[in-house]
Image (cartoon, rainbow, N blue to C red; front, side, top):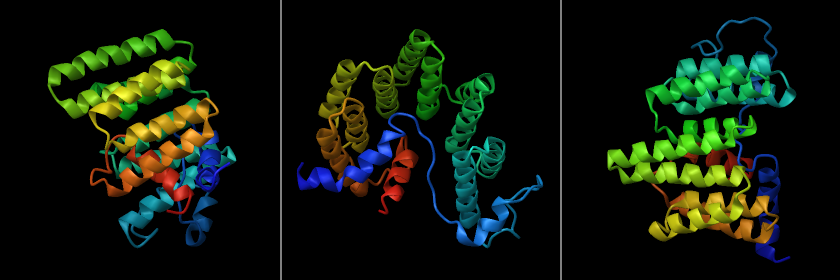
Length: 252
C-alpha cells in the first residue's frame, strides 16, 4: 500500500459508516456539557445560553449529534427542531430532523418533512436525494428514480444549468445507493468531463469506489475533491455541509 493511500485511511474509515447517507459530526463540548443533561423542554437557543448566535448553533449541533449517537433520538430531534427554528432557511436542519425520524422508525413523518421541503422547492437537491434514498430503503426504488427523472425534466424547463447539474448529480448518487455502480460511474465521468473543477464529482466517485472496495482509488478521488474544495469559493452549496463534516472529522 502506498503512502498516499495510507495517509487517507482515516478518511476511508470515516466513510465506512456513512457512504451515501449523511449522519452527523461537529465540535464544542466542554462548557456546554451540563446543558446536554437537561431534562426540561425549555429552548436551548437563548442569549443566556451562550454569547453568540454562532456559538449557540455549534452547541446545538453538537448536542444533536451526541444524543443521536447515544441513541437518545427524542432529545436529538428536539435539538434538530431548535436548529430549524433558529435557521429555517437552511435545509440542513430539516433534513437532519427527517433522518432522526427515520432512525426512530417514524418513516411517514420523515417523508412528511421531505414533502414539505419539496413543496416549497421541488428542486432542492439534498431533499430530492434524501427523499429518494428513503424511498429506496423502503422498497420503492423504481418510484424513487422516477421521481428524480421527473425532477430533471422540471429542472430542464428552468434553463438553469447549475440546477440541472445538481439534479443529474443526485440521480447518479442514488444509483450508487441502489448499487448500480457502473451506470453511476458513467454519469459521474460525464459530469467530470463537463466540469473537471467540480469537487463534488470526485467526492461522489470516492464514495462509489469505497462501496466497491477500491479503496486506493477512493483515496485518490478524495484527495482531488479536497484540493478543489479548498480552492472553491462556492462552498455553501449542495453537499458542502456534509463535506465540511468529513473534513472536520479529520481535523482540517
